[in-house]
Length: 87
Image (tube, rainbow, N blue to C red; front, side, top):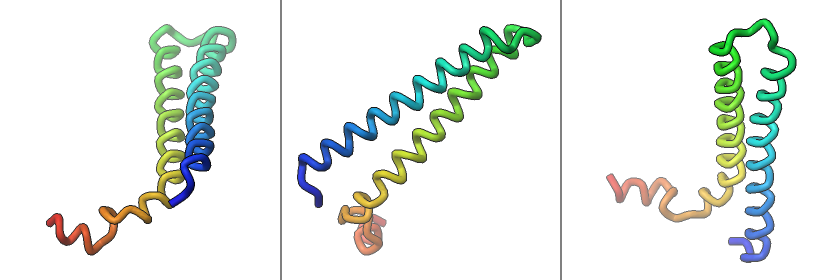
């Protein structure tokens, strides 16, 4: 396993990336709806914001899964032989 200091620095980077992705998605979609979607109804504007937030959540989920994959390989409970014991 990594040293706690390195893990902490990597975790801070992951949290910053998560906040940035969420903020950019929310602010970007709201600015688009406010200034560029003049022909849209209120329902369509809400759907645009919801769709962007869903896409941002999917991107954040993928990033966290990819970042944690190496740690999951090292955990004993995720090995196949341990999985057989749980069945």
